[in-house]
Image 1 (cartoon, helix red, strand yellow):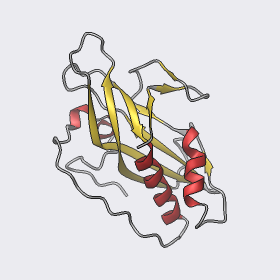
Image 2: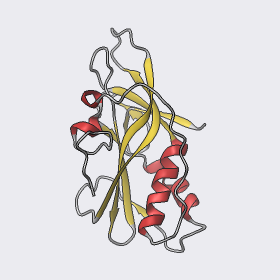
Image 3: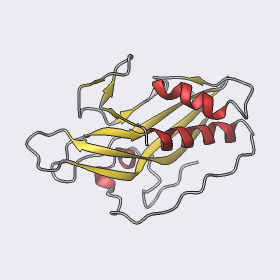
Length: 172
């Protein structure tokens, strides 16, 4: 599994301001997205960072990742999550972006430092782009594994009404 740790991404993709972001974007994974969709699409898609308006499509799903508590006085070393909220947006002229939402430490309520499971991110974003482009693609099969229950109060996606784990979730 390919993983990278992200806190706050600068334009160069370097981590900084650890534990201060409620969400992340991964423009450096755009080339991997392009490679994943290139066999089905002849039109290039463009990553649009910093554009949270003018989206004509939105889709909420989950990716996987690991988090590390950034509070040095906290005893919680970290946690894994199979339910990391992500909002994928589609724009006119084949633009897209994807926002991955942070989680908080259950011990001290501090925002975590994310290690993204890139495979799940690339797979989910590529699938959604192809669906929006009208390509008939088979939905990936995910084996559901039991884990700890999702804690809405610790999920930044839930706080923004994005996360599909919310009990009253209704997002088109």
